[in-house]
Length: 129
Ligand SMILES: Nc1ncnc2c1ncn2[C@@H]1O[C@H](COP(=O)(O)OP(=O)(O)O)[C@@H](O)[C@H]1O
Ligand SMILES: [Mg+2]
Image 1: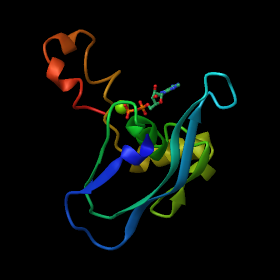
Image 2: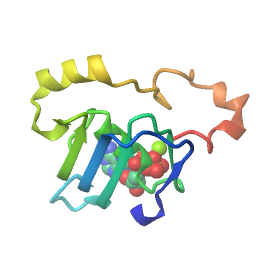
Image 3: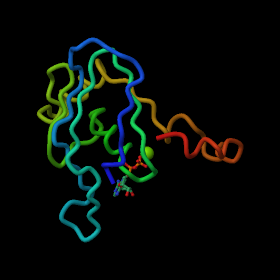
């Protein structure tokens, strides 16, 4: 599944690495009968100033990846480094402060679209992460 995720570079940037994702794995319900192995060793870097789109079919793991990068969930294995801060090594309180100061996140669901609005914009449901 995750090999279907591709990174598209939309703009050239400077050389400084802003985000590094190293050997990232994630399983939901780890060890249980309903375990889902979503991310299977993701590696990439994004430089400062680079604009990147992560694309892939529904269910391939885009939201899972963004939730972990955004500090909303912890990976099963691997590491995320943002401007030399290792996300997985922070406790809840540190992560909360880090998110407050460094992360902007626009949610697909829960906040932006009121339930029922899809009726009027059905074409958007496939376009958003
Ligand atoms: N909280 C969860 N518990 C169990 N499985 C989940 C959970 N969230 C997502 N999944 C599963 O993980 C896979 C990837 O989901 P997701 O990251 O939402 O993909 P995408 O955003 O690319 O559509 C899917 O098979 C989905 O059903
Ligand atoms: Mg999604």
